[in-house]
Length: 371
Ligand SMILES: *Cc1c(COP(=O)(O)O)cnc(C)c1O
Image 1 (cartoon, rainbow, N blue to C red):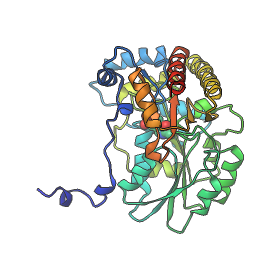
Image 2 (cartoon, protein in one colour):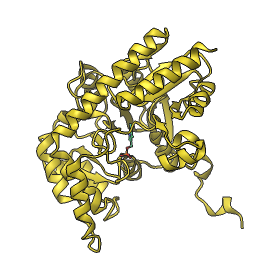
Image 3 (spheres, rainbow, N blue to C red):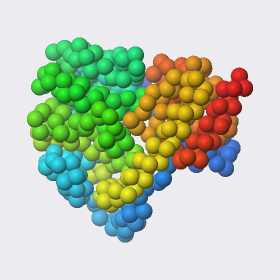
């Protein structure tokens, strides 16, 4: 059997999702580290867990698992449309934001099309381009680790199909300002689709200079906003996300979307989550508290960090991040290294509960001071 003859030509560019320590789910982490308790700060998960209203709705939905779910997720779609001030025809659900990224690539990309992607950003954009045999064109960040919109524009050619913009940017936590976003949209050719991944929108909303791209989907036919219920709504394992865009874009993606890509448990949980504003505001409160604890600790250690619009903080430790990762893991704390992005001294630390932050700060400080 010659596997390389069986698989598609793009196969050598693809890599399976890794099973390194930072990528493991909680139970496997505990086993791997031989610990009863682990503080997991590697996935930007909401430490509070889902809204009690969502849990109740999901438990109720279990009783009807014999029935297929709503294909388009009608109820959630309507609810999102009302909340975002758009029409239901502007909304499409997906099996997490990752699925939306994949659907966009499958809908729009031909081999040899160019896809502009910032150099340090969420990895699935690159993976989706590779899957379709498209050509990723990387665009450098600015000195302050924010996405350089001018650099994105400068890379547009007649072959450009898509531009991926992560706002706020994972893993750096920076934003593209409302002004920069407006200017970017003004200059992008109509036939280039701008995909704005707003996985951390709810954390950034109200932050200085931040504006969602949703308000632009009415005037600009070539914008697709991606959101998720995995982050502030705390439904990461349920797998549900959504896109907001011009009805033409949404319809095109619906031609590609599998009919039942979002399960009924996820739909029930998402619907109920949207009605629990208290859970969102409590999550924001805990996040802000933890964020300032991290800032203070990094400042005390004299480390360079980036002010974050998300639920994680990017820090340049100035030393081998692999060693820091190992030393933290030994103490039962797991963070994210960024060596895959070519950053050998930086870490991304998810914001946990205040007690998680306290434990991280104590361990981290001890490790650095004992060098
Ligand atoms: C977490 C994350 C996603 C993936 O979200 P899912 O809905 O869980 O697939 C997508 N984009 C960014 C920027 C993220 O950080």
